[in-house]
Image (cartoon, rainbow, N blue to C red; front, side, top):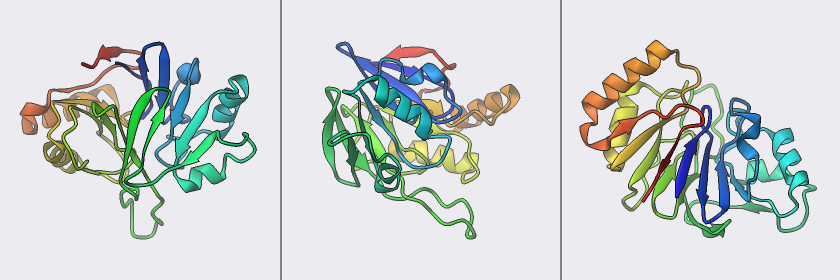
Length: 212
């Protein structure tokens, strides 16, 4: 499987000529959805879900299917029968040939005055976990964690503790577009210090790695 990091919280997973895209929001590149066979959306916030761009991709590819939670699915009516699938914690399904498991139910708390929304994390082929905007710990070991390193709902110490709790062999930075280069370097030093066993790394947008 090849993992390509796009900007912010979007990644592309490719294997055997099939492409699975996760969380192509407004901060990700327009080409993030090019050639996608399936899309996974963790939750409804604009930096993870951009309706018009996703609809355009679905119209361009009548075979494109989407898996997401109920709130996002309600915004994607009219795409045709069987193309938008509602999923929740504990569900498992096959998307574009990838085996996917769903973990988690809620977005992390941003502030007591801001209502929480639903959020589902996706474990793909038992190899890589995208938590969306939550610190959900899967109920089984995952070799590669996509680690949300900066958000209004988090602090760096909590991010480090989360990476420790998941215990993945590798952790790639995610959810990072609001950080300056100096800020990214600071996060890398801090998490690298506290999570020595995780193999923390930040991929530049468009950069990819092979997952075995």
